[in-house]
Image 1 (spheres, rainbow, N blue to C red):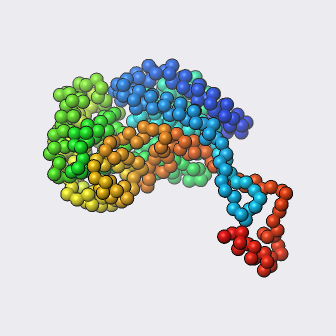
Image 2 (cartoon, one colour):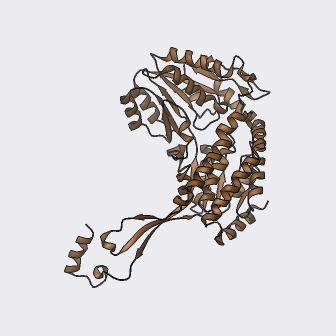
Image 3 (cartoon, rainbow, N blue to C red):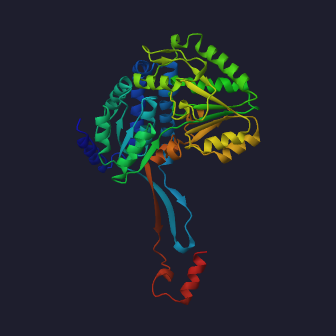
Length: 456
């Protein structure tokens, strides 16, 4: 595929104005929904091949999420597209002021491998809803899912409107060398920096959804049994390969033993005595990441789990004890089924620890103390999170999802997706029946007094 020609073809198509009408956008979303439903079995098989996901987890975290987002955006799209009236200053009498959303043009969506369908299609829904053309670059690390995405898009759209580019680094580089009107990237910080650098060549606006070490905090007032269940769910879902998974655990020393016992029992209940034989438990995406995770565990105290199988690229749900800030596992985002545990005595210790490092994508707090909740929320900056739960804050179209600082910039989901892929113009429509002379030369004392009155 000639990427330069593809981008130019999309630019010509966008210039025709055909992507702008509401009717066209709604038809495109409906076509996409029907194609996804036709290929649901294909997606189940592809995600099983790439990540050993069960059909239940595939629907819960991938297909179902995309369909829910699509239907939500389609339902609310007419209201998203409306101009928004705003007050007009007295100095601009007589006029009306409003903001008007317009599509950027030709956009690029670069997706990761950990949720290869959902994280590719969710932003595409926003791009289509906003009236853009889209080039989609799925991950080369999840080839089966990428192939199904390509089939779905080819069935729905002409490549001059929405297209998929398959391949690896060479194709990524070729895409980033093109001039897009907007770039949406989900992935790691290192590649995120490269995307931002490439975008700066043309001053292209971007949305970066990255990651980081997201803390999970359990104080002595928390419901320990419930906390254990929700932590285990959030940490080991998709074999820990979730950008908003709890990366490490801070637990109050008075309840540590109780929480560890509840986590042990919960892992046993969820995954059985042999988690690696559980058909609902996933695998690490490839050998490179498997070896990286094994390296992070070396020399650490394994409190539970730790079993692994290099043939199937699986690591059992693992908890590491006696972790310090200097431990190897605390120096990078884990992105796997390994949970380091540290203790605290005073919540201020945790706040200092988190705020002295890069801002995380997520933060999770388990507490029944209003004071502690207020302390953490008022002191810690993070992309989003939960109180007394994990990861579910991203599973809604009613709130935006995104990072802050090195965990990302910009947000999407629901209306936020539409706004992210739109430029909102500010427009003043001035009436002609009166033309206030105050602003025109020549100036004088009377005009100066009137100016002060109008601009108060």
